[in-house]
Length: 81
Image 1 (cartoon, rainbow, N blue to C red):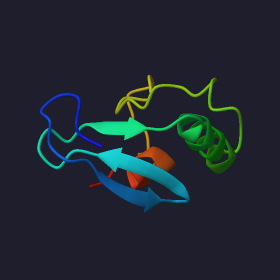
Image 2: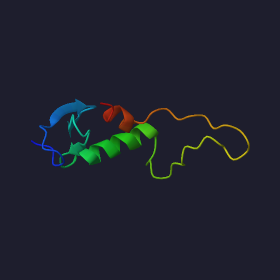
Image 3: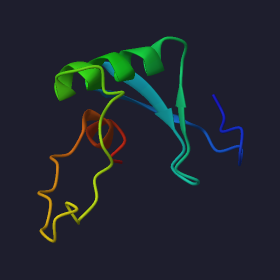
């Protein structure tokens, strides 16, 4: 399959059981049907909830202190090329 952006041949890789097609030139990522659903589902399970009610990760906790940084999400593991 070719990249819709620049016509380069896409490379397929398996990340956490999800097949991801990506372009080595423009770094675009394409998912087949159902793969985004798998990623969202696994992300919600890894976060311990639905993932919809998470607060934004800011440095300031609102009380003059620093908020602890969150560990990387499953998305950063999947899309780290």
